[in-house]
Length: 214
Image 1: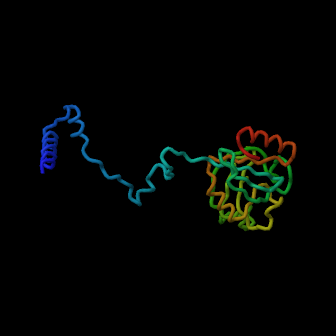
Image 2 (image 1 turned 90 degrees about the horizontal axis):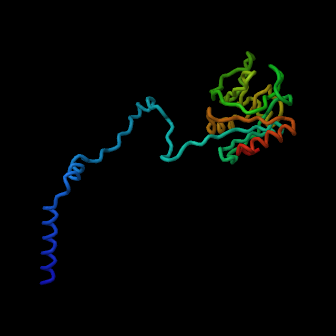
Image 3 (image 1 turned 90 degrees about the vertical axis):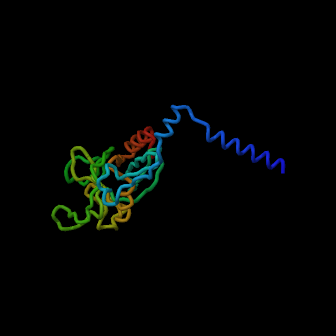
């Protein structure tokens, strides 16, 4: 019984010392001002539209931009990330005529690197007053200096893909334009390679220099 008595005596002494112990005044002040941890306050569902940014990313991470590369000769569209990795590719229908676009209605697709003006719901769009709804569900509009109305869109003629029969835009199957729409943004760059093999090789070298694949 003696060892147990000694242990109880020691515990009593420690508890007594803890009750009597005082922290330094500055630390006591900080502890008293700390208060308690508050529960996180999340916005109500009806308030979501008032948030400044609807995009949420993991802390310490940042969203990575995807770019588009279109090879008219191979009738393929590639989606690449900033590291140069190809994350998706789709068959396309490019312009009926080959070469750099030079004038309105020349049925050529512009060549070069372009920015995205916007991504629009084109379900009910009609081609030049013909009444034909030929743009599919989405239209990715490109800023092509000197020309207006060039973009990447779906189609009502899926049999034209892959191929060369468009008036200047790039056509995708409707299910693929839906996928593409979810992979790009207004920050994406769109590079359309030249039809000329020599010029295409030179453009590919520039793309490689900027850490993007062919």
